[in-house]
Length: 124
Image (cartoon, rainbow, N blue to C red; front, side):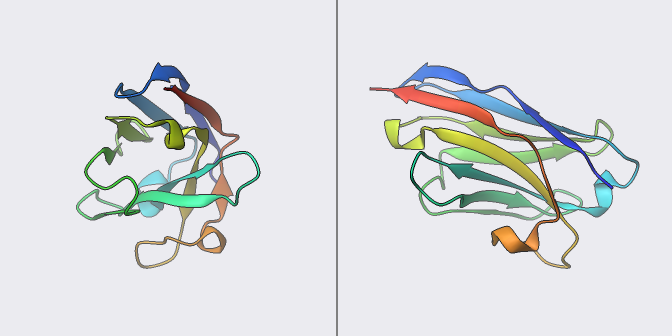
C-alpha cells in the first residue's frame, strides 16, 4: 500500500514557476511508475506527466511538453513536477498517482493510488 501527499501548490503569475512534490509512504516506492494529473473546475482529470521506476523514462502531455519536468528521488520516496512558463490554463488541482502497470501509464484507470491534490492557480 502506498500513501501519497502532494505539496508545493499556490498562486503564481503567468510566466512564473512552481515545483510540486509528492511524498510517498511505504518501502516499495521504487517499484511504482509515478504520474501527475490535473483537474480544472468542470473538466475531466487529465494526464500531465509520468516517470518510470528508475526515472530513466518520462512521458508528457503535449500541453506541458517543454515547460514541465517530472523527476523522482527514490531515496527520499518523492516525485517532483517542476512547472515553468506557467499559463492561466494550467490552473487546476494537481494530483500525483502511483501505478504498478509494466509500462508508462497515461490513463487514470492504470493508477492504483492517488494523493489528495494540491491547488495551482496561475493569474494572468
